[in-house]
Length: 104
Image 1 (tube, one colour):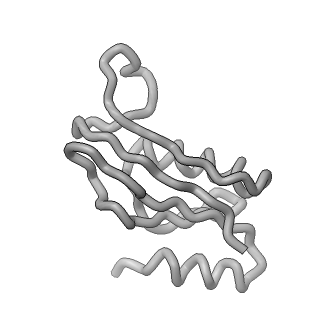
Image 2 (tube, rainbow, N blue to C red; image 1 turned 90 degrees about the horizontal axis):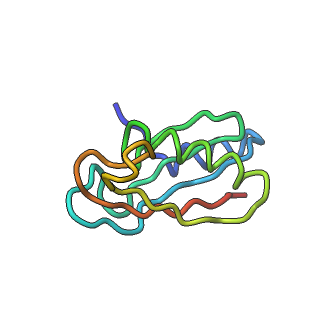
């Protein structure tokens, strides 16, 4: 059974955790998750929900740690580029933009 990331974020904040939320704000082409999808991350790197999957989610969780510390929100973009295949990207051929912000 899937749990609502927004409900989980509220619970984690109530437990005194530092929390960030990532939201898919734009997609182009084929994308694994639709606009409005959420991933909630705490200061220890625990996470619930999904904005993409695989390496992209790992990169979002890593960025969220910095965002929790600094409080500065950020827009992340992931896509496919053959010349930068070593970087984190989407194998489905699409592009997504994810807004990550600290909560609480």
